[in-house]
Image 1 (tube, rainbow, N blue to C red):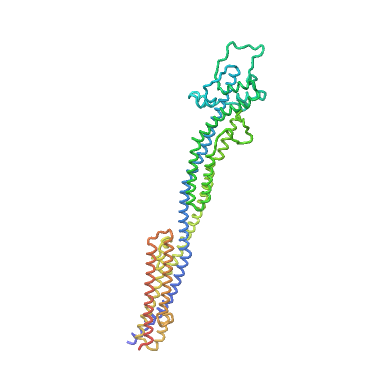
Image 2: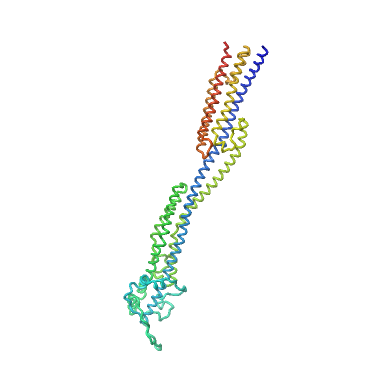
Length: 521
C-alpha cells in the first residue's frame, strides 16, 4: 500500500513539475507567436493592405483618366478635322472670289475697249454694275463667272491695271483711255463695231475722264473696288459666316464643355483643363468677330490697290487664309491638357506596375513566414495557403493562433492544480513545502490567482484590440474576404476570450489547491 502511494505520489510530483515547465514554455511560446504575428502584420499584412489600397486607388484613377481620354479624343480629332476643313473651305472660297474678280476685271477691260471704240452705250437697266450683274444674273451667266479662270502668268496684268496709267506699264498703247483715231495711212473698217451696253455708272466715269484724265486712276479704282472687289469678298464672308464657321464654333463649344467636365473629374489636371476651356472660349469669341473683307490690314506690304494685278489678288487671298488659319488653334489648345492627362496616366501605370511587383515579393516572403508560423504554432492545417486569403482572414487567424497558445498555458495550470490536489491527499507534511513552492511558481510566485488573472485579462484585452484593428484594416481595403471582417474579428475575439477564461479558471483552481495545501486543517 505504501509502495503504491509512493508510486502515485511520484507520478503526481512529476506531473506538477511538468506542469510548471509547460507553463513556462507556454508563456514563452505565446510571446514568441505574438511577436512573430506582429512582425507578419508589420512586414507583410500592413504593406500588402496598403499596396492593395493604393493599387485599387490607382486603378480607379487610371480607369477614370482612360474614360476621360476616350471622351476627349473624339473632341480633339473633330477639332483637328474641322480646322483643316475650315482652312481648305476658306481657301477654296477665296480662290473663287479671286477667279470672279479676274473675270470681272476682264469684262471691265472689254467694256472700256468698247467705249474707246465708240460702240458702248449706257445700260440704264443694269442695277448694280459688274458685281450686281453677277449676283442678279441668270443661271447661265452665274455659271460663266463661277467657272475656273484660265491660268495666267505672275507677270500678267488685268485690263484694269493696264488702263490705269499706260505710261507706267508695258501694254499696247491702243488700250489706253481716251478717244483715239486711226493715224494717216491707216484704213478704217468698212463696218462699224456692234453696239454693246455697259454699266451706266461706268459710262459716266469714262465719259468724264475723256476731258479730265487727271482723275482716271482714282475714279476707276473706286469704281472697281465698289463694283468688283467688295462684292467678291462679301460673298466670301457670307460663305464663311454661314457654312464654314458654324461647324467649327460648335466643335469649340463641345470641346470646351468636355474639357471643363474633365477638369471637375480630375483635380490633379484641373488647372490645365480649365485653362484650355477658357482659351477655347476666348478663341470662339475671336473667331466670331472675324470678318473677311478686302480692306484688312494684314501686312504693311499690301497696298490699298493690291487687287490691281492677278498676282496681288492671289497673294492677298493666301494671306487672308493664313491669318485666319493661325487663329484656328482649338486642337492645339486641347492637345496640351490631353497630353498632360496621358502623361499622368502613364506615370500612374508605372507606379501600379511597381506596386504589383512589391506585392508579388510580399507573397514570396510570406511563404517562408507561413512555414515558420506553422512550425511554432503546430497549426499548419489552419493557416491559409495563399497570402491574400491569409490577410483576408487575418483577424480570425490572429485570434485562433494566440487563443491556442493561451489555451496551452491554461491547460498546464489546470494540470498543475490537479497534481497538487492529488499530492495534498497522499504526500507527507515534510514534502508539502516543495509542493507549495512548485504550485506558487506555476501561479507566478504568488499564492492567489489575482495577479495571473489580471495579467491574462490585460493580454486578452490587447489581443482583442489588435484583432479589431486588423479587421478595420481589412474592411478598409479592396480585398473581398470569404468571411466578413466583422465576423472574422468576432470569431477571433471569441476564441481568445474563451482561452483567457479557461486560463483564469485554471489559475483560480490552482490557487485554491495551493491554499488547501498550505492549510490542511
